[in-house]
Amino acid sequence: MRRIAVLTSGGDAPGMNAAIRAVVRTATHHEIEVLGIRRGYLGLVRDAVEPLDSRSVSEIIHRGGTILGTARCEEFRTPEGRAMAQETLRRHGVDGLVAVGGDGTFRGGLLAGQEWSLPIVGVPGTIDNDVAGTDFTIGFDTAVNTALEAIDRIRDTAESLERLFFVEVMGRTRGFIALEVALAGGAKAVLLPEEHTDVPRLCARIRSGLARGWRAIIVVTAEGDDAGGAMRIAAATYRELAMEYRVAILGHVQRGGNPSARDRILASLLGAGAVEGLLAGQRGCMVGQVHDCLVYTPFAELLAQPKPLDTHALRLVDVLAG
Ligand code: ADP
Image (cartoon, rainbow, N blue to C red; front, side, top):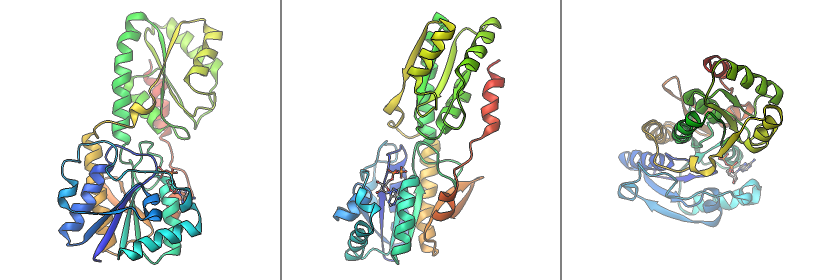
């Protein structure tokens, strides 16, 4: 293997830069050249390519976002688009591809891997943690910590005013962020897409909690909850409880910021693992970390079923609410 390419795709996540750095430096260590593809699969289709060396990735391990940029690329969903992407790689003499992204990125990687002779290894980079084949995705820990910092601040004012706060965190289809934020933030309840939200039951819980002495009540909601966003759920509880409330929607602040130590380390291990995997003949798979071990899972396998949510942790939120 003489030359590989690296791209970041889908939603950006803190730690993607640390992953790029690890890919470039590991490849350089093995005397392999690296090309950076700009804006994910779009850069492959449009031939937006730049050489990366050890120095091009200096001073990026601590920066959020991705120096390569990322984009949604509709063309890559078509065989014609993927053929153009393959042509770009062929023209530049690329022998292997590292794709950092989420489920969508690996869906594209699965199809491309079936159509091309070129090996592709994926690295899980998304704040949502909704990728099977790895305990955690790059960016998740930072997003949880960012949301937690906001909750801690909200708690200060919630305690002083004895109010009900609804805090909406990211998670359109999965509740991994909401669950960890709720558990770490001492929330009284968590509402997420995996479970049906029963507003009267939530109100009954709040009423009985108040009777037991709850003062600051924080309810964490994932944006994709089946009862609607935090605004709608809060308004519905007001109709039953007539208790003053506030809503905080954290939104995109959760995406940015410097990656946490955990995310930098995970990105370093997985970025290096992707290159080592390519060298060892891995293809059509994603490198993840499961129980502290690097694991290569075929794209088809990890896309076949959704990553399970920790239901024990979910029940614990209620128990520890007191
Ligand atoms: P993520 O990788 O974070 O899940 P997306 O779902 O936006 O983000 O996917 C990133 C890119 O992967 C898309 O813009 C598209 O180019 C490609 N992709 C997603 N799904 C498919 C698919 N079914 N077939 C081919 N390419 C896909």
